[in-house]
Amino acid sequence: MQKLVSVAEMMAIEKAADASGLSYAQMMENAGTALANTVHDAYSQHAGKGALALVGSGNNGGDALVALDVLAQHGWRVAAYIAGKRAEDDPLMTRVKQAGGEIIFPATVGGYIDLAALLPQYKVLLDGLLGTGIKLPLRQPVPAVLQIVRDVIESGEADPLIIAVDCPSGIDCDSGEAAEETLQADLTVCMAAVKVGLLKNPAFGYLGKLALVGIGLPADLEAYQAINRFVVDPEMVKDFLPPRPLNAHKGTFGTALVVAGSVNFSGAALLSGEAAYRIGAGLVTLACPEPLHAALAGQIVEATWLPLPHEAGFIAEEAAPIVAGNLERITAMLIGPGFGQMETTGKFLDDLTAKVGTDLPPLVVDADGLKLLSKIKDWPQRLPKPAVLTPHPGEMSVLTGESIADIQQDRLATAEHYAKHWGHVVVLKGAFTVIASPDDRTAIIPVAAPALARAGTGDVLAGIITGLRAQGVPAFAAAAIGAWLHAQAGLAAAEAVGHPAATLAGDLIPQLAKVMSDLA
Image (cartoon, rainbow, N blue to C red; front, side):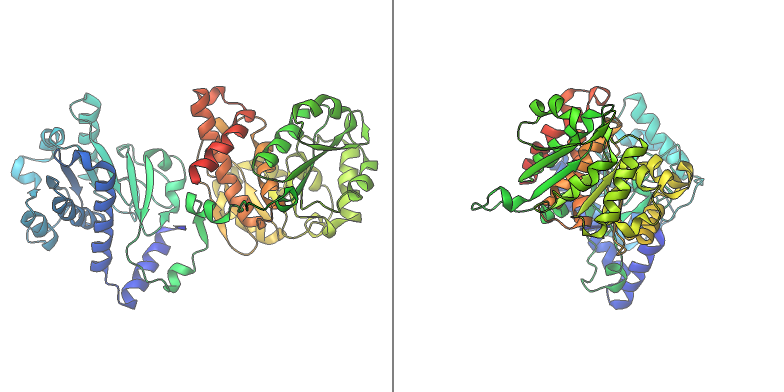
């Protein structure tokens, strides 16, 4: 499981590891070896064209030198361009020389500008100039070195595959800020844990693919085990996806009740219900205003229906006892997509949570349901704990009274604070969706996809999470893996359609099958 850390947390982890007997030198050895193996596994076809490392004075430069030694043992032609202060008798540089590699100091070739002549001679460029602890602005000569590389690439004289060592040089690994000279990586290889700033913009745009490698930390290292922030990855998703036993029947996979829709937003119920089915729920019942039944029934023939009393096409107050009376076999319930803001629907929600309240089945609340919920006194205490709340920043603003700007300024802290304050799982949607649990666990989705910036995609996410909850997946896990599957379906849909601007919310649903198939 990939952990997410601040720079200070990573430094504390390394310090604790050193104190436990894993020296800094051994951590560097492990990191550099893992880096080299990752590069070789991905790009071994380029071994003959070689790897050039930009080496700074810090630990990332050391990682890069160890990697060059290991790559040379794999048959690579290697060289190190020493752009930071390192002694000429540095044992790591000596290892590279003994492995047949070349060590190049700028002074020996007439200055940094001669880097331009070196770049076309190598296919892989390891960016080991700066580490995770830097603060902007950059100080010379680093900006000059990075700019030379950018200029050569932009001129077309070289087209290297750029591998960032732990992070692209020029990234503030806490804030996510990026120097204008920062190189666009094809692959970023993080050591031990993903640094929190990498999953913020603009930093994320420089990462390319993201890989995580170990540095040999002891399994019982308390400083590492205490980290409860995670980056959701395929392994985590596979661990929590419900099994599909051969002797199963529809009851094995639960029943989801989707209470959604209004005359103005009929598609919300359809998208949520389809998503709940597609993610594996055994049965989905759609509870929506009675006029929507005729319009939607033919579009999702697998669903069962609970037509509800309505007022001008919106769920009416008198629907509360009908929903409450049909919960016997429901294993998860979604409330809110497409509700609208009519007073009568607000009274329905008030009555339902007052009369049934914590006796409700596992609950997901989304969209207008959240806005209506915010008007109910002591609403967090009325919901079964933990419910899953899925606000976008605007809805989070309504729920909290905080401005959207303040929420977006520190999404992690905001989601974590209110998850604990309310006692429910919070899914703060948007680029790098944050999932926070009241028990201090936090997950982040490493995806920022414009294809998901479209009406209805939130309804799909809510349906996915509800379908997983119906199958018995715990609240935090359902929210985390549901958000990851949703994000991957968005990426796959954009690829299938051909452009993110042309991707519709409904395009995500058939892609869920592909995403889950790829996990198998």
